[in-house]
Image (spheres, rainbow, N blue to C red):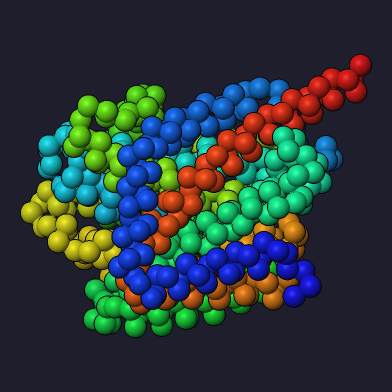
Length: 497
C-alpha cells in the first residue's frame, strides 16, 4: 500500500496486540484496564472537569472575538455542503447511535435507579434527571469537538497543512512534528478512534439485536450481533466506496429525516404538554446552573463523588477519546465557513436538538415508569422498545428506531473509516478506498471479537485510558490554535496598513 504511512502500520499492530490480549485473557484485560480507569477517575476527575469548563469559556471568547471573522480556507472559499447537510453530517458522526441507545434509558436511570442528589422517584429527581442528561450530552461536549475541529480545519484549509493532529502543533514544536513525536501523536489519535468507534458499533449491534429480540423473538446474543455487524459492515463499506459527497452526505440526511420523524411521533403520541413544559423549565435550569455544574466535584460527599465518577467523569473521558475522530470529520466537511459561523453551528444546534430529544424520550419513559410499569427491569438496549410498547403506534416507532440505529451505525462507521484513512495516509483529504476498507473491516472485527468474548467493558476502559494522554495533546492544540489565530489577525492588520 504505497500511500499508507508509518502511523497505519504502527497503529494496526497495536490494535491487533490489544485485541489479542482481550481474547486470550479477557478477565485479566478487563481487570487491568479497570484498575487504570479507576485510578484516572479518582486522580484526574478534577482535571477533566476543569478542562471541559475552560474549553467552553475559550469557545465563547473565540466566537465574540475578531478571530470569528477568519474564514476556514481562502477568503474567497465558500462552504462545500449546504447548512442542513453539514449539520446532519456532524450530528451523525458526533453522537448518533448514543441518542437512540440512551435517549430513554439515561434520564430513566437518573430518575428511578440512582439520581445524582435527589431521592429516587421524586419530582426533584425527575427534573434533575433531564438537567444532568443535557449536561452530559450538551454544550460542553460540542464546544470541545468544536474547538479541536476548528484547530484542524484552520491548519488544513487556511494554512495548507496535512489533515493530521500532529500538523496543528507546528506553531509550538515546528519541524519536530514531522518526525517521531508527530507519529506518536497521530498513533494515539488513530488508536483512540478505532476503539471508540468499535465500542459504539458494539452498542449499535446490541441495540438492533435487542429491538429485533423484543419485536420478533430473534435470539439475543453474540451470534445474532455478529450477523448484524457483518451486514452493516457490507453496507458501510459500499457507502465508504462511494465517497464523502454521495454515501456519507445522503446517509446523514436520511438519519436526520428519520430522527425528526421519530422525535415528532414521540412528542405527539407521548405526554406532549408535559414534555414541552419540562423541556422549557429543565433546559432553563441547565443554562442557569451551567457554571456550578461545570465545576462540581463533590470532594466531601463520597456517594455523590461515586456518581460523578460513574457518569460525568466517564462521559468527559469518553467524549475526549472520540475527539480525534469526530473533530477531524467535522473539520473535513467545514471548509469555507467563517470561524464564528462554524462554532455557532457546531456548538448550539446539536446541543438544543439533543436536549429536546432527551426531554421527549426521557419524559415519556419516566411518565410510563410513574404509571406503574417498571421499565428499569429491561436491559439498556431494550428500554426504548419497552417504552414504545406502552404507546400508540409502538410497533411502527420500534421499526423506525431499528432503522435509525442502523443508519447511524453505518454513518458512524463510514465517517470513521474516512477519518482513519486520512490519519494513516499522511493527511490525505481523499484517502484510497483500499485503506478505508481495511480500516472498516478492522473496526468491525474489533467490535465483533470483543462482543464475542464479552469485552465491551474492557474496551470502554481502554478508550478512557487513551483519553488521558490525548487530553494533554488537546491542550497543546488549543495553545497552538490561539498562537496561530493571533498571528493571523496581526497579519491582517499589517496588510491593511
